Image (cartoon, rainbow, N blue to C red; front, side, top):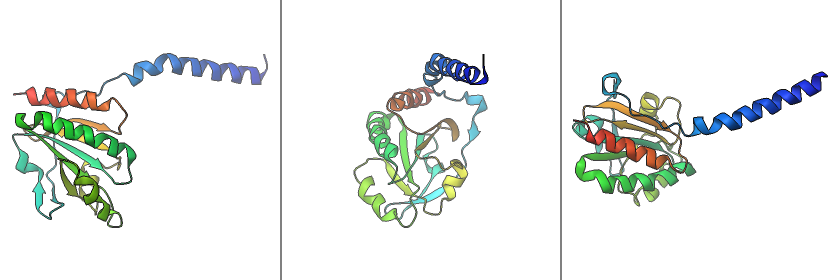
Length: 178
């Protein structure tokens, strides 16, 4: 067997293995972190669209979904309607959703136009201070769920159809905690 045949067989084997094991990896659900292992969520303060300051700590005792998004991010625009639906369903159980726009000053004028359609509370982070603190890789969308005690219970980056089901399951589990 010559070297080219060996390379082709190696590539074929690697492809076959990836097809076999990809479904196992793709179906792996993000998990809620065990309460004893959760890290404290760093405090932050940002202004909302009305210019009012909002601090994470003002929602202590509630479950807070913190979602980083941008106007240029198509997956973000697909995910936020699902967050709105969750907010409507679980608000009375103590759910708060903060959507943090990571838009730069050049595109920030578009934020209000989009965010006014949503029921979430939209905050502005034009300097990227909170992004650097909570989302240092700068992924959009990126979502954290902070438990009633102010600790990070769940995080998820990106959005693909079906992620909203996993996120809702995480929200329900965290809301149910004592």
